[in-house]
Image (cartoon, rainbow, N blue to C red; front, side, top):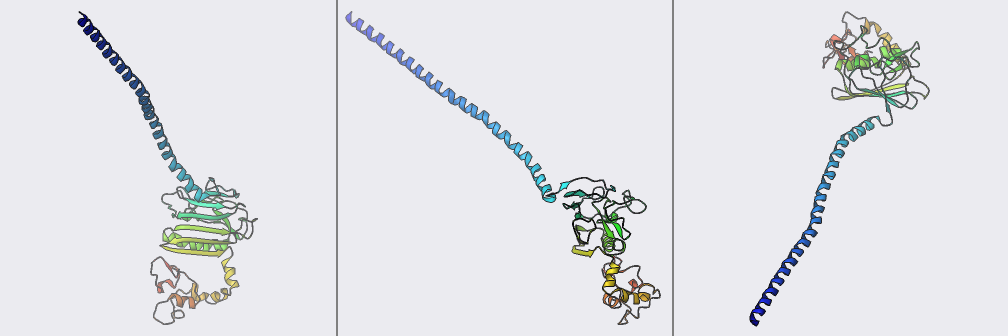
Length: 317
């Protein structure tokens, strides 16, 4: 009997020990689980935070092109205010330190003024010749019936001179007009340059630099034109003066006058006084030695006796 009681006590004790061990294991497992939950939440929060960082990147990428565009414009127009002026505006006033598009319709010809409102620079990547078959050109060959009244143009000896002519796609407001000596504008270097560009069908890399004797006047003292013609860079520089008076001051007028009967009115084709070697052809040197100025145009009586290698109607250009 005593032995049975001992076995029973041992059995109960064993059951109690096993039960306590299970409870301890369950408690330990629960504690571990509770400790792992915040870590899982932390990872979840971390994963949710990552999309916010990703969302910020496209915003920066979208802004980049706009910033680049602004920098490009700033580089071209740095220090100048870009304004719009109607191409036919007859006002002669110019704003200081501005840039204006003076190209007719879609052309982009940029004109710049200095702090005194003087027109000092005009640039164009490409000069596009006037197309009177597609553009609204008047019977006079101009886009507008009149030009801006820049101070000085009302003089008897000064024209409303275009920096870029109508025939080359320029407008007629004050940002493309300067008071220019009439003979120079109509028959001199300015007219000759425009004719060359027209016959070439346009040019590229065009730049005009206009200088003045002082800061008070709007009448230029000189012009310099640089442009690329058929792959060659051309630089034309001339003073804002009557070329005939300049030639006279250089002693060239008398020589030309003495040769006038043979240079302008000889319609019989007598080239014996010019063709020094008697081969029936006149070279540029022979013509110049005889007192003729270049270029010789296609309507000149000497032209048929000269060689026009590029067939543009001019010899000695």
